[in-house]
Length: 315
Length: 279
Image 1 (tube, each protein chain N blue to C red):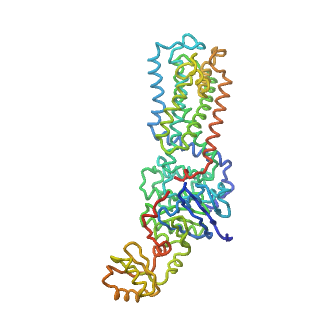
Image 2 (image 1 turned 60 degrees about the horizontal axis):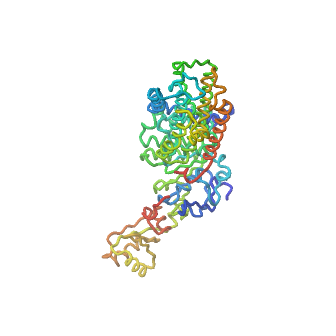
Image 3 (image 1 turned 180 degrees about the vertical axis):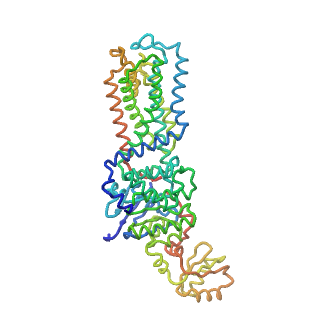
């Protein structure tokens, strides 16, 4: 474990009966970083998130948050983490302010500072005018913002957000990320977000890609994309397997067959593109050339698509 | 001053975070209750209806048990039983919300807060017990119509005993509701366990001399709740030597032990972290 790690995970495994949700995961999150946990639904993100939030027991391995063992000192860990769940955690019968007051009292915040803090968060998150409304009368996006305010109320040093942009419109999503950056810069808060959105993953400082309970890639979004090489060539073909064999033979590259598509990572995509089309034009229905995306990283590391049906069986 | 400094400001330090957390959760119970009028009607209306209907229906066929004055009507006999029913129903309604809290997600937020499991349990129990006492207290106002003259001291004693009973039954509800994921499950347990427990507590008919039923009533902790309440309501009169009615000290002792057991199990349950809590 490095001295500056805010979150340190070593050999973490978790099973639900015979189903393995996490399979020997290890990584560190640097203090003050915005760390993204990217993966398809069912990849183990939520399980890992819930272990970090002290909701699930640590079955095997070690998890430390700000140098506290989550299994041994959950009470200390709870004090400095702020948690925003993917599923709602608000009392729908209470007003926005009542929800936040209830939460603030659970964290032992006295009346006056609590009132100031709630006012500040409500105005920052654009909720000031709805503070007296019951949560059940709010739209999904507004309720989501209240959830986020709830997680931030006690000024946590580590913020855990499970799919934070679910239900937020693009404007609110942008605001949220700007605010996360502000927290990181001004208060040195470490942020861990889980997401299945590539666009959101791009905004993180460091990214771990999780698939079938394993970390398949770890690094900054730029590093991960660069690890693939120059370009990414995607070819649609009626007979992809056969074409892959022939391309491999002729151009000494290793295409991967994913459904009806072939993917080739190569340093100089435009040359290969021309040659492949010249050689095998009739067998190609469409072809595209792009800089690699995080999705390409995922595909390269796992050998299957991000939205693959077979990998979406969460507990 | 930035909000960070304000929160860490020693002058605004909270003296007792445990009590604040309990108050936070209990206050929420009360607010929720008064926002759902149907719950008020259900918890208070049904017992009153039972009292009036059973009282009228069984009026003729009731003969007072050995310890009771000859003049006791069924409505009078049934009165403490209805009080306990109100407490039981309120306890059921307020603990069934644990299942809703779990399903709606509120509970997960509470479970990641830095509060002890005892605070989680106490918040629920204080809220539920307060609601029980308020409602049972309202029903108590009908006592003078039965000719039960109660001094302020007696009223206070009755309220305190109701509070103890309410606490115990809410704790019983808590330990039943905590492991369940569906309110239907709770309704099933209510029908086969909680209601019979009340029926066989001397609330609705006296123990009598018949074999097994007498034993069931004898081992039912709620019997001592009903009997204790009965004794307190008749404090001025000579139920002291009444055979077949447990002594006041026994009633208090049994109810206290029952309360402690239920609260302990509830705290133990709330302290566990299992995969189930992650739903």
